[in-house]
Image (cartoon, rainbow, N blue to C red; front, side, top):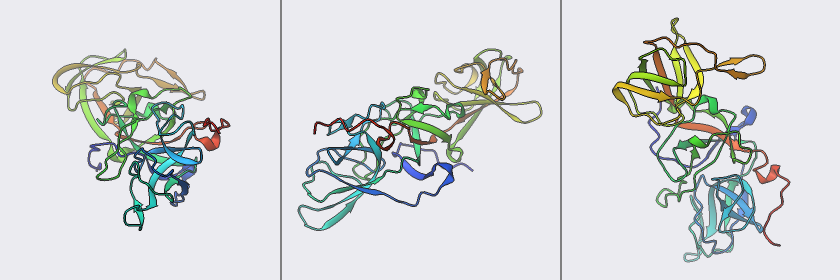
Length: 301
């Protein structure tokens, strides 16, 4: 049984390390400058500028930051501690409140470059509407959103942007896997034999976002992946609707792995299975994480 529908993005959550290594909760304390005037939420990506933690913008892989210059990405924010300037008591908090006047503030950051994170997928970098990552996107790079977090929960509202999955080397995240636990499936009947990247379907049971994975049921009852994803959002309907994929259903040729579009016709009346993977497993891209980059801090020293 699948978990409940993901209703909103929540930032990045560390789950383990590449190679199946356990994430043991190891973190690094990075100072936050007195009065730093940008909220940082649990699950936000952070960098270091002039020795202090800053909130990073990950809509591109340029390492741009809010509230500081340069710095580069160093990890993900998992809370902070500081002496409350009013009560004079040590305080641990889910998010950093902008402008807090504390001289001993530290960000708690998971900074291991090999950490894998669970993250939701959204339809654009300005939206919290959940989208889908397809299996064909595994191994691709993707950017993130840049939204303000929730001051009530202290959690980030950021995610990866599904429709940006590409082989662009400057994108900040590498897609390592999809999350089947929260996947949602929909079905439709193929109204006419499919020989192109467009499927003519009837009785589509669910609206499909861009990035929905496409497969079909073979005559022997086995599920056949097409190596393609939905390329334009489709609204559910009992009638006939065209579903456009990014490419014709493909086979993978061993041993080179080169995709072929010569899979042949998908027979009429075949059941098409659409899978919406609401979440993915990602890591910070090699060369984007500042520990794996030889680009120095660009802040003027």
